[in-house]
Length: 415
Ligand code: PMP
Image 1 (tube, rainbow, N blue to C red):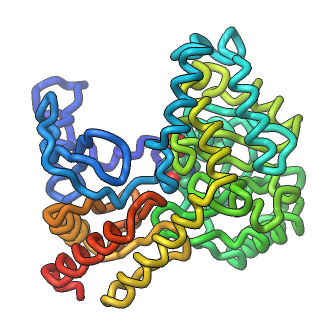
Image 2: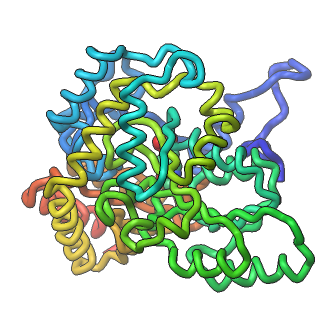
């Protein structure tokens, strides 16, 4: 496959430069397919934000407040006073930036403390934090150096890019289908794969489908062949089990060799982590290029993540989130929407990009932000609106969201 994701869209330059680029033509081509994306500034992070739909304005011109139902800040901790204070305290005590790679002078006590907490939360020997979840996946998969990676077809783009960068042969299996995975491994075994290193990689909670990988079955398949399993818990960390994610909820920490996740969603911060064995972490610390060649995570992000992890594990925030999810799911289902998934992420698949854009726009007119999700984030023909409540939405706000969905769905002929 062509390693340049946009290469197929590429137009020859029209400005007379024989070896130049024509980004305007490429934008126009996206626009024609309803696939152009825009920024929508918000005045602050949280479920109640003012939005500025015209990204051209600088400073942005904000409209009246809207209710955000699309954030990954599932527990509403990005605006939580305890978490904000922890970020400030880390900036005061340690500094605003790490100043260098962890391997030079950027390895502070607060990084070590967060890694200890993450390892404990994940029932793992040790953890290592990276500057983003994206960098974690790309760096870890590349550094593992598998010969073959077996990857769920709906895995996140950062996993896909990690597979590409690793140079491994990548076998994509049907979404959440452990039988298809078993067949793929058995086929490879028959072809003669002696001595190959195999990695099976899957999200636990899928960010666009809201469903959960069949992890016990995945581990069974892996163990039949002696392959390793890597699980991306970006949308599960802080939410499932004792906050350790689906791997922990299912009691699989001993069977999943590489647990990764991000600090940027329920943990209300920025950065990613890997948790696993001591030798694994030591290897990554030496070989994962985004760890070696990138500045250590900023101390305020470290402080915030550490406090958010504590709050997520010890408070009733998760109960509040599940109550909101159920209220929203029941309401949407009873008005006739086909709500997929079984997690805090509620996808409403409508089909073509234009239909999803139009539903998103009608919601926005009614004060609700739940934007369209289009290819290449999701497969062609499955554009959708992805609804994600947070723990800090009130019952009244959930009901306002439902009323907007009812009116918008009727106006769009979806109900
Ligand atoms: N993995 C998954 C499943 C994700 O959804 C995301 C973020 N969208 C990432 C990894 C990347 O994490 P980050 O945003 O911290 O770079």
